[in-house]
Length: 137
Image: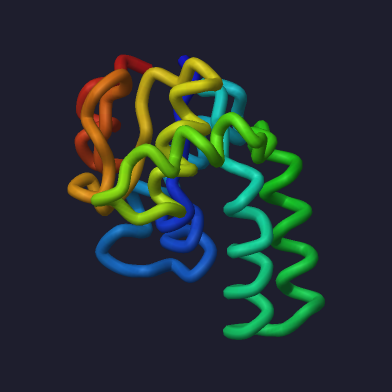
């Protein structure tokens, strides 16, 4: 199954943010173990690096980004995705980029803690906890 992880899910795991950590980490573990195909947008990589570097340091940021690159498929940021994201004027542009990245890659589920930030057409939007309740692994 192809799943897309919003940046906040990755941050929950990296910073062990409670009460979200356990469910987000379980989803990531399924990706790491090749039980699920995990995708993230290329836009997440630079955002994650920036946040990790700011909160920790450059060495930790580089190591964690390398781990993310090893575990996830990275969806390229294309002109088509950027244009599609601009068509949704009432949503955050970055969230719309994530949404169309997931759609264009054929992901079945977009996993986020901010479900209200995403359209619900064309892809299932789920929290980590909701997603884990629905899969049979």
